Amino acid sequence: MAYTEVSLEEASEVIGLAGFKELISIEKLDGGWANSNYKLSLSDGTKLVLKIWNEQHEDRVEYLLGITTYLSELGIPTPKPISFNNNEYLIMKNNLPWTILPFIDGEWLGNDYQSLFTLGQIQANMHLAVPPKNLESDFSMGIKLFDKLFKIADERNCWDDFLLTLKSSRSIYEKLDKLPKGIIHGDLFPDNVIRQNDGELFLLDFEEVCNDILAFDLAMTFVGFGWEEGEPINDRWVAILEGYQSVRKLTKEELDALPDLHKLATLSIAAWRYWQFKINLPGTKHENRYLEMTDRLGKKLPF
Image 1 (cartoon, helix red, strand yellow):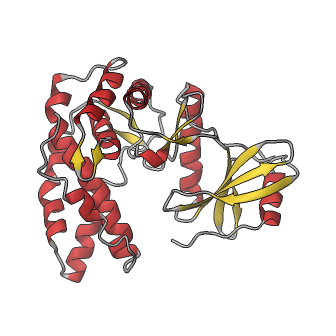
Image 2: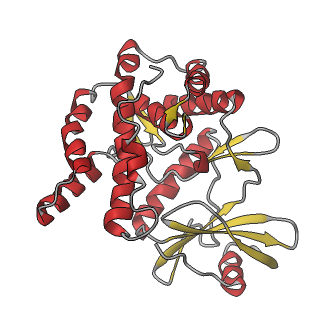
Image 3: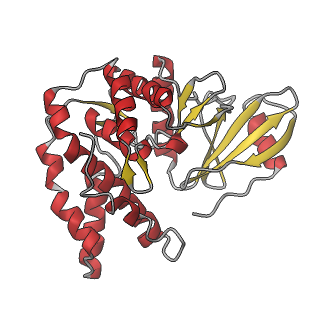
């Protein structure tokens, strides 16, 4: 994915459409594979994020911004999009959606007990929230992506070991379909959670948000935060789970399903990496990053 280059003048023009003036600096932000993000500093001390959505269509971005606004207004800690003078949350420029967000000053969330306990609490509160009526039910890195990869494998007549593993695991989704569902983030990894200096956490990048299995989302958080050098760290799971269950108790069925849910979450991340770096953008140093996930399969888990 090519990063969209933005000049100070272009950024000034865009934020001017939202009533902001006197931009003094623009800085590229790390993180994110599908978007271009810039930190904007204004003369009055205001800091903003300018986000250009390189891989999403206008209607999809409007949908995601609507869901993010809904969650923010419910009290889920996530930056609320800033509207332009026309009361819309995006503008189209060079055939790409551009949006503005408040800049959250802090650092990527660590893996200490208190940080993960608090993350578990926030996730449980989100899971208890009433989903908006228009929330989609298809997890974009799940069955939908699996089937896309299977179709490509058929067309190319090329089924490697990973795709065969993926295909043999597809039925797990159907077996677990009756578990409690609700709003899930779907991608709570360290670069999607910021901790401010005062300890407050903010969840970022709800691009995978959907109405799906709640305990799957919890397992995905362990995939993101619970591993070190290819090994699961039991204490991190304890912190996440204790924080979560201080707000929402898992059912026996959910607890029993955690190994399968963790396998699906791990394969979902592997499938996204396979799609992004082996099929969509081959030849980079990330081409085999999906193997970091598949190497975790079969390891002894804390549940």
